[in-house]
Length: 489
RNA sequence: GCAGGAGUAGCUUAAUGGCUAAGAGCACUAGGUUUGGGACCUAGGGGGUGUCAGUUCGAGUCUGACUUCUUGCACCA
Image 1 (cartoon, rainbow, N blue to C red):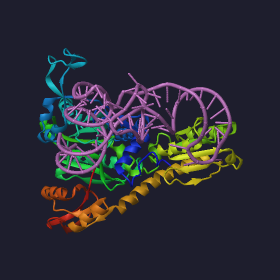
Image 2 (image 1 turned 135 degrees about the vertical axis):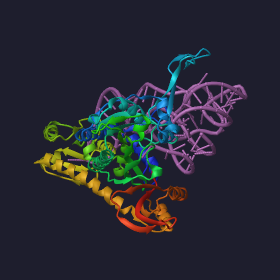
Image 3 (image 1 turned 45 degrees about the horizontal axis):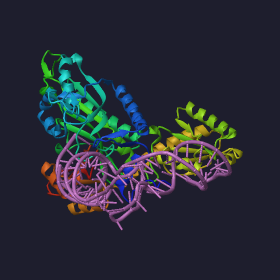
Image 4 (image 1 turned 135 degrees about the horizontal axis):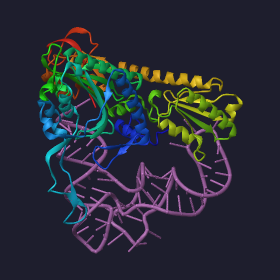
């Protein structure tokens, strides 16, 4: 049991989360506030996410490119809403040289090396990209332009938490240009579906697809779509966003094209992204008091084989055969032959790291032609036969993947409450948490008032919401559909 | 950013302002004995207490600034 190492969830959820990040070897703090070092095991998980998403982007016609980290300060001022949204958290480069401190040790900024134009470290790349697209787009024949980039961005946040909100984070940002509004809107929605599919099929993290309110939408967007997930502590996590940008950036950066009728038009744009924040979502969707729990599709090690009590010729033979068979199926497997560590230690360590399936092989097992199999999601132990074991393990991995999603869906259902009065709303929020489905009169004023009174925000207007006459829980004004409230990360 | 709390070895932590030996457990190294859920024995190595400055005969213990983490608030993708 890892309970001596990690604080239990019920005791202190934040401490538990930090404990997982630290003790599962995902990340650690850096000397700079809000920045983190992603360690090899954590990065391996991110790589799996990245590779799959990258594949999905390419399958839908996108290509990768890379735009620079530094953006001329003046670019940020071109789209009014966009500036306002990001101005508060931009890191600015003002000088390009250090010098020996004339008054003592160390180095100081050389005051004579001031930059002509200050540079902003990208908080997102719309501005540099649209400045570039102006030159790339002349005709409808140049469209659509479907580009993605994998990059780091910096947003100087006041309050940071590993993966969930860091000053620097890794993400992908797609930036597309289209000749019609409809096509751009379809792109926005297509990517939203892609994100949702990824979240559910790969992360086993159920999400609600929806539209953001005006108040919550991306600075510079016409519409922001979101996938919202529910964490175990009842708080929501915005896990990915896809924006229909209209012609806002095209106008700000003067990106026009000649259409088929030889008429000049501004192009239509989208942008969309998911980040290392997904790692936080992954942790808080599945993990438990024994450590990380990973869905097999994202686990760097899917199966670990532990010789009991230690490797010997007979056990090695059985293990090597199994390793070979599993690898042939594309399953990543580790045979832990470390003689210094006893089985019990290894069991705990791999449970802490979230390895989905553990196989224990001992002399007694081999005599009976079985092994010991323990699955991480349920902690169930079984004794499958050595015959057809690789097939069996493959099945178990699929089952774990499925079970994690089902479990998370059930949790979300239990934690989604429909309320019709403000008293109920507050009651549920305090005692139960989770998503609250309620009527809202559609005004920013009411939204902000509810936030002020309860700390809950409107996570989204779910896309699958039924039209339903009702009255706003706060003002009693008429409403046509329920929206989803929650306290959020 | 504001208000509280905290920073001692890789981790968890001990040490009324006082003998320039900052103690331990885990981890690490060597050897040995063990081995079906975090083994045990023996012998080792590692820290000058987040950083800088100050008070003091004397600072891990007190003061200030800075820095990082953390809780709450504010802010925010």
